[in-house]
Length: 189
Image 1 (cartoon, rainbow, N blue to C red):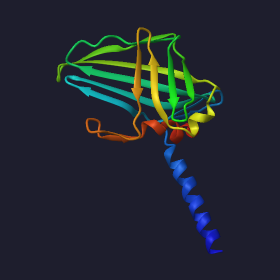
Image 2: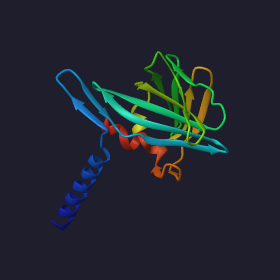
Image 3: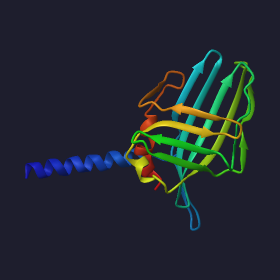
Image 4: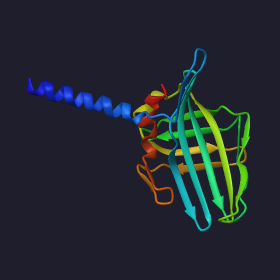
């Protein structure tokens, strides 16, 4: 009986912990639409000289379709070239188990917007885009960490090595990029 109670308590804590991970920035449901959006998570950070680059992921469910939102934020005293996501763009994820998963662009064409921060004298570019999951190896992403991510922009391809833990002193945040889908995909299915 003691073991049964311990097991019951452990299962209750486990279920509570899983539900706790699923906090949404947006959760709306009407008769005809449904939308859930998870908070943004820092996936990559590169600070070099006067230039900073951040890549954020956010999972969402739009009318029962799980999607990935990416946001690239670049900041520099120097000129920053434009990045575009087109219908041909893809995100390719190589999982730790060796399998490959491809996400397809949901945008026709979307280019980074240029802004200027007068206070810090920085150019800032922000690109936000959305991607669909494919059925191929979809189940594997729930159980295997990501080792390498490739984003195919319109004019270039960039590779990112995803860390098991990313601590950003600039943003004062902590994330686990390689296990992002393992931790949060369940929240948008």
